[in-house]
Length: 172
Image (cartoon, rainbow, N blue to C red; front, side, top):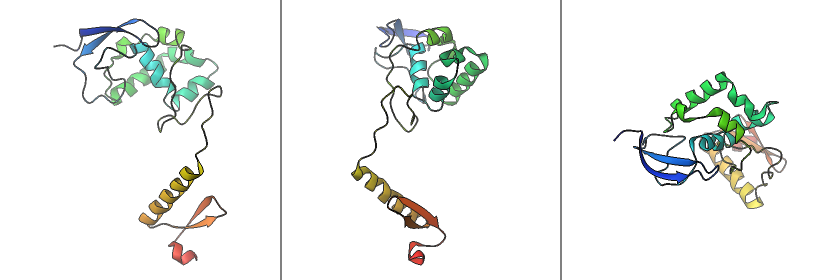
């Protein structure tokens, strides 16, 4: 079996173009992975979803005076190919039609707040504040980690931790 052998056809769930699943899948792929079932995005929509959910790429594109047209610059495309290679992407660079990515940029795409994407554009819903229970859990985890690595700390007010040399007992 070659990488280009089609197996199943489906429609892109974002733009509706016909897609072909191709096998074999790259088992070590970390980004732009091919679907093992006949659903998902075409190459162009997968690139859009990746860029809109990856900080700081999403912020740079959003804040650029040229918006997504920035992606038409050869240097930007070359950098994206380097990212694909580093992430051992299933997708090949030749599959991306950058002009189509730009034309379809404003089609709906799910944007998620994750460790890889802590930023949303100004017109999206703001990031909700953590609950009091979550804040307490985060603070306790931070204190436990500070103790584990042997750093001293003192509370400064109600919410801030100030690191000090020595142990917490020495600061008392």
